[in-house]
Structures are given as C-alpha cells and as structure tokens.
Image: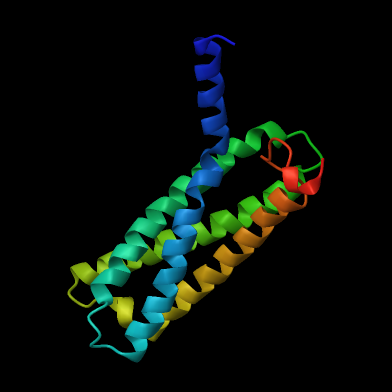
Length: 161
C-alpha cells in the first residue's frame, strides 16, 4: 500500500469514525450539567451557576456537532435493513439536541436580561427531560453498535474468532 493510499484510508476511516469519537463529550457534559443544575437548585448560593452555563454551552455545541456527524455517517445505510433502527436513534438525537439548543437560547436571553434562569426549577425540568432524551439516544446508539455491529471493524481477539 502506498503512502497516498494509506493516507486516504486514514482520512476515510476518520470521517467514518467521527461520530463515534464526538458523541461521548456532549453526553458527559450534559449529564454533568443536569447533576450540577440540580445541585444549584438545591443550594442557590453554591457558586456553580457559571459552571452550569459553561457546561450547557459547550455540551450543546458538542451535541450539534455529534448530531450533524451522525446524520452524515448514516447516509451509507440509507437503503439497508438497518435504516429504520438508525432513524429511531437519529430522531432521539435530534430531539435531545433541539431541546438543549432551545435551553441554551432561553438561558442566554435570561442572562442578558440580568436574571439567570439556570438555577430555577423550570430550567432543571427542561435539562432533566433533555437528559432523558439523551439517554434514549445513547441506548439506541448502543444498540446499533453492540446489536448490529455498526461501525465496528476487525475481529475481537477475546471472542476467539
């Protein structure tokens, strides 16, 4: 294999793996956001309000990037039997991402008006619902990987194959 072919394969594999690489960061950040938002609601003077804002913004940006990369990586499966399973995962992901985008806009407007809604019970409810949608997205994504072998290459030596 020439270096040009090797480089081309590396680039193709990286693009194919981009969704798998990106998806874990927003999940971690947004789940941490939910936990810290609950803490802020229970302890308003905790000093964590700014941290939750940062987690929301970075987690939402990551969710948008993961959703876009997921839509792109779904195209090769468009005409396969797995299309319906992938679409279910895709809709959970789009719903979660849309909710966190809306929460980011809501909180941004609230902050501009001088009253950060990030410590309110209503904001906590929105974040909790978003975390539930995120969990469904993760569960259906896990099904794609572990039950259907999507984006899994090679042989696992532990399985004796």
